[in-house]
Length: 182
Figure 1 (cartoon, rainbow, N blue to C red):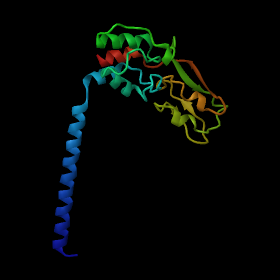
Figure 2: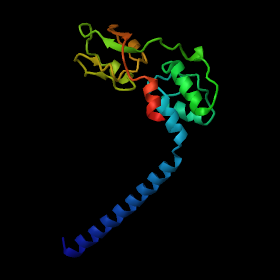
Figure 3: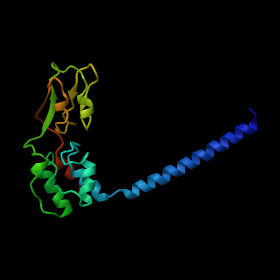
Figure 4: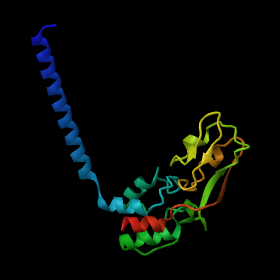
């Protein structure tokens, strides 16, 4: 290969890198423009259980729907009355009870617990957990990181040997999220 071909190849590679960089910069600027600070504040108040009880695929889509007036603030059983009061304050609305069509709020926080003696390591619970609070691998025992578990209950029906149960437990509460979002 002669020196002229190497120089041409380097120039083409540099031009391609500049073009790709410019395209990525344009996309990043456009994405930033679409951010809505109200959506961010609403999302920060939600419990991040990603359970889908509100009929949205996660807390962020629900926050977007609330911000755009497409959903009401009473659809989040995991967040309960605390979340609804925080959302009502943020949006200057009247608080209301959780709509029972979307579930019943728990009186105290619950977290999943895996009976490790009965766990067969099938790993069916791993993809069901929307927040990756379950640790394990196929053919190995699984356990739940209680501080990460949101108590959404999505892992319970996936277990073929019924070794997952919900127990009272501590986790980050909506009030803590509200203080961070303010």
